[in-house]
Length: 622
Image 1 (tube, rainbow, N blue to C red):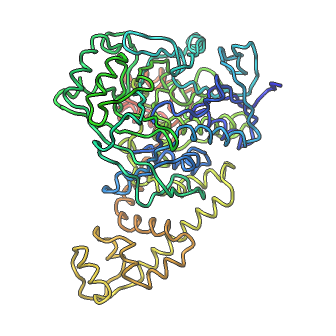
Image 2 (tube, one colour; image 1 turned 90 degrees about the vertical axis):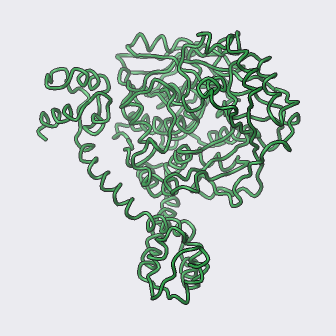
Image 3 (spheres, rainbow, N blue to C red; image 1 turned 90 degrees about the horizontal axis):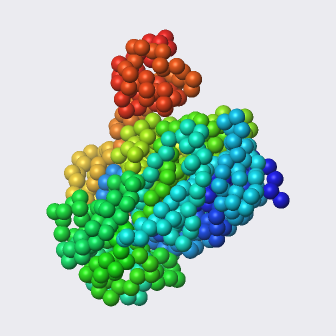
């Protein structure tokens, strides 16, 4: 039954799902091994996808032929585009999802891919010969051979759950931890560490008084994540907002003495940007309240996720504190919040393909690399699956640069800079974020997916229609004028200066007070032209952004061009930095450990100075 596979994916979370799908769709025979097949693609924390920078990642996954965007669209209960008051580089899609439907939809998606087999078991050891992984050994005594292995262990490696004074082994509540792999890899020279994350209590929505909270609606005209023909939401469920208060904080403080974090029972570093409620009270002691988001878990359940109240305090303290929150006076818990600490492997031990440096054909993806978040995990799984397939077929690796995708920023950050705390993506991490917008992910990446074999002709046609529509509209706007009689009425309404003579439309549209939709409502000929485009909505959006931000876009492209010169200077993996005495001692140590692939990557390593880069350039004859 269990044959030799091209790729074995260990783990069925967000990273594992995308890894299995991408490798299989490229033609590899894939086996997904997971402890519980009924828990594939579990939303272990909040029932939501996307958000600031994370939404961009989901769109990039979709543009590359992954499934996270499609599954999200098919299971949404609410959609919001965040940061619309800011520039388009900051616009970030976010969806509230039906937790049960999301997991079910992912499983059905994977089961429709013929090249994927499934096996419910626990991998206890990797089979390694001459520093190359050749298969896995499971708790049921199975030895399954493979040409490559993608390890997506999430929080399961020696996972330890904490609730107050109690702690017990587990990768998630109700699921056992995975043991043996950390110890085996440590014996092969891998450095390992501990991290922690947490989750809030789940609440019975029937026990809440929503009338005392602020209702948070979805967008009146919801969008979606996938560039394919997925459905648009016709109805949505609201979320709600409430706040902690001084009474809440005082009750929570009574449990700090028994808190596993403050008592020193948790060794791992927690997420800086998603702190527990204990952390918030301690770090922001000047605040008398903290915002909480009351998020429904789905269409047909009363279960509520209390975003912002992650905690590992005792059940009694949690329950008592909850009842002081407005709208939660009679709150009942389904289960308490808890913290979990787990093993991870500092990602500076990886190559840019996510293959490990010490063991060939072994790939890491997801929280095992020190990241946090479904989106960060999913994109790593996608890239690991692609590269595992390419490796076993003797093909060139697939690597995205920092100027090509948020995915490229994430992987470069992890490998070049490492991380000692759970890594989360933000728009501020991307120096070329105006080029890496959520709206143009398909223009940037679908041609690459098509070349790989992950995007079909229909997707390429859609991309070309969008590009051609934007170009045609830009040309029309740049070559068409309007008169004061036609346009001044609109200019007065939006509070911008009238024109006194014929003016080209690009001059009008470049004003911040004017958008393309107002302009086409005012000018019938423009409206007729847009209606004739093959991708009118998408083309209009692209044309407007390109026109309004032309100067900024050109500046970023120039910066990319300058940096690309360094990215094109390759460094061999076996480069002997220890022999270059002109390098600083810190640079020799860091370069030898990280083994950068290019001069550009070397320049981003902490501790490698511009003078060290000059030494390398001289040595290489540049």
